Length: 277
Image (tube, rainbow, N blue to C red; front, top):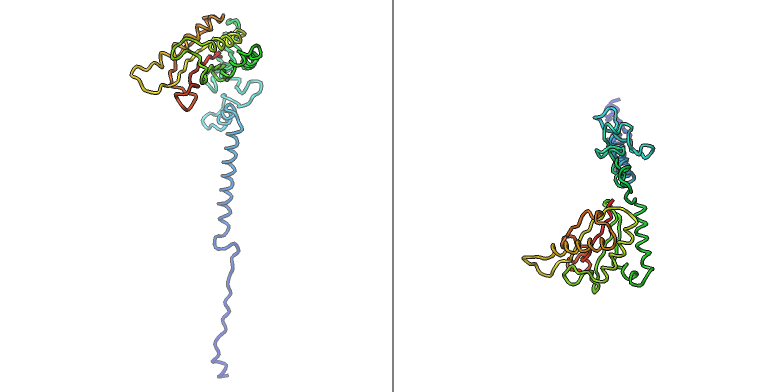
């Protein structure tokens, strides 16, 4: 009995293991919030790329917290073209309204307005402007001169209208030296533009551009030269049976808007004739 009392007591230590580690499940909540935020971000980026300005306006109006009953825009393209039936009251989207009395931007781009009934012939639509481009290209088949002249013409349709750009190339100028005297090439180009412009009634704007000089002069002639060439082009168009009342703007841009990265390049000598919307 005395020997047994000297034995050390046996101690059993039990370790409690908690599943999930010392962080528990809190990281799952944070990760779920992160994934949700990323999903919302990518959905927003997709919507910005896949929707039109009108549709984005409709989405913004829907989530606007300051207007309990929104009468601005539905963002659709149905019977009302994205406009509300209350558009006369709210003048949505662009502040102009949706009827012909207050033409929207889309209607204005087609030439529609509240005075169409009294204006007689209407301006060309986009399809008609594209037909003018096709007619201008087709003129190249009439003669070798016109075929060669087509390499001096670039056309593009913008918000302002159909831009017909006539430009010079090395050894093939539009005007004699630094004057406003047209070359035979320029006369041919203007004749071609006048032929296709007679099929529509759009107003016309003319802009003259010249290349920069190699040195800076105190009395730089680029302003006078570009304006004189634009004026000469106007007179040439009128001489080819284009009514003078169609001329709405004649502008000299000097060398301020080069199309070639070298401001002294011959390509910057050009005249832009715009059939305005």
